[in-house]
Every structure is written in structure tokens, then in C-alpha cells.
Length: 159
Image (cartoon, rainbow, N blue to C red; front, top):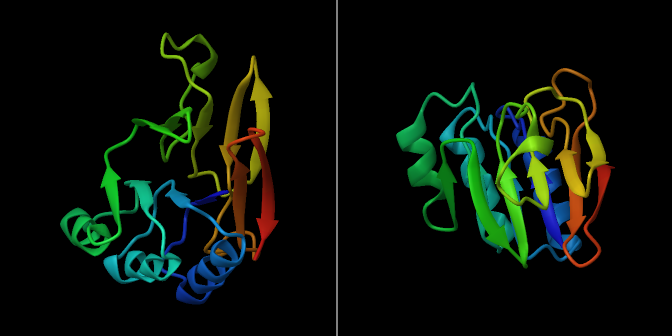
């Protein structure tokens, strides 16, 4: 399983709940779609005991600190970030990417955040996934997503 999280916005209690959930689900990777906000929130992901791939969000101002916080167990990049994992080709962004379906790049999964609204949909075979807001500040609910790379199915989970 791959855990997917976004928009943690320094809510340490919510981040810790997400970490416990991902550990219990046996995630081999966690993907963060931006807006940690501060390095102390990013450090909480060390408890996952699996690698983390992340991108900067629009509220991630302390970029050097975030990179240093994630370095022992993960990596953070400017968006959009293309990578392969478990045989799937991912595009990771914080802000939704327009016109993905017409992209010349072969993609299997597009992950984004920013809207704070969970979403799982398909368009021409492309899985488009927004885990919603883990921080829960806007909606009052903390959500994450689980992605099964074998079936290419994803589900939103409230933690």
C-alpha cells in the first residue's frame, strides 16, 4: 500500500493519527502533496518507518528546513514532480494540474492537494487523486488516502 497525504498545515495531532494509520495499513511508501507549513510537522513523518516523497505547497515557505527535516527518510521537490514507484508513473503536484489528460507523458497516477477536498476519479485510465486535508482546519475532518499499486485503486480514509 501507498499512503497519500496533503495539507497537514502543522496540525501535529492529525499528522500523528495519519502516521499511526499508515503504519497499521502496512504502507511501503507515503506521498505528501504539499503544505506541511513548518519543518517540525514534516519531522513527524519519520515515525512512518518507510520512505516519503513530497512536493512543496504554496504555504511551505521554509524550504531549506523542510528539506533538512525530510532528508533522513525522504525527499521533497518542486512541483510538478514525475517519478516511478511500484511500476507506476506518478505526477505529484500541490496545485491541480490542468489538462492532464492531454499530457504527452504517459502517467498512471496524478496526485495533488491544495483544494482541501478529497477526490478519487479516473479519466481515460489516469487515476486522479486528492487525499483532502490531513490538517482538518477547513472542513473539520482529517482525511488521507490509500493507494493499492497492484489494483490501481484508491480510497479516501478519515483519520
